[in-house]
Length: 84
Image (cartoon, rainbow, N blue to C red; front, side, top):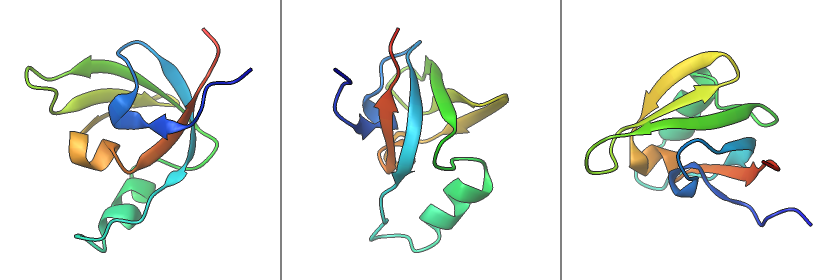
């Protein structure tokens, strides 16, 4: 049985998930567009590679691209963990 959907900010280090979508950002209208532009598209895989000292930023790999993302923005990326 697959795990319930959660956000990229909650995904443990080393875990891979499938991007299910991006939640609308109330504070910053351009946030969703920026995430899409840098590669956070539905259906791609994402892996958390590193977390900063205080949990910010996160180093992630989206398909073959390495990206640093703030925890606040990672909280908008809805993911579904893949089986280990």
